[in-house]
Image 1 (cartoon, rainbow, N blue to C red):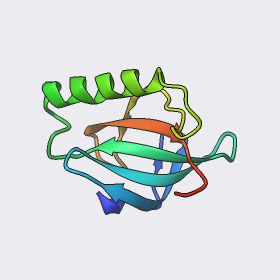
Image 2: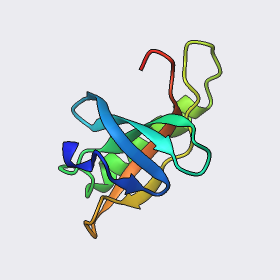
Image 3: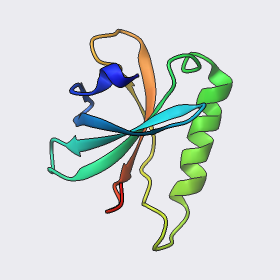
Length: 101
């Protein structure tokens, strides 16, 4: 998914990759509306068509968004966006970026 660097999803300009796991990749991005630096987690293209993984991804976002702790970044509800010029949807999750990322 590193091909997403430089693209705009929704109103988030993807700048660089922060990390990657078995289910998703996290990118450093800029919210073009507010100028805020954010982290965007995007479900892997290999599993983004599987409803079970999308349900799990949304459940994770719902649970984490309910947490309120100084060491946990605030998470915003997931959306489904077009991945670059592809017509295929990609579930993504936006969070306020911590100073360490």
